[in-house]
Length: 103
Image (cartoon, rainbow, N blue to C red; front, side, top):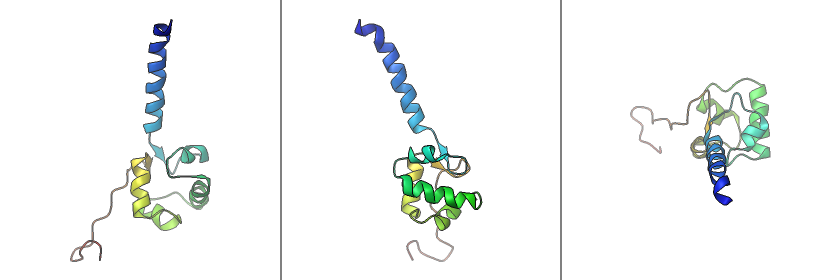
């Protein structure tokens, strides 16, 4: 009897895993979508949505500059969890020419 349900159970697990790995675009996401990203809770999703109401995010640098609680490290973690800005994952900016990283 259990063998009859195994394929359906496997399919359900795969669909759930695929949904968990799906990208969530910060410019299109609903509050529930944002809350589904590990590292974004109700307070952060509210700040994101409040800033987005003032205008869409142009890129990750814009998101980081406008939303309290999202810095480069948090942006990298959230991107790893599936958050994107207009479909783009976070890529740390290189240091300007003549400037060593971390200075």
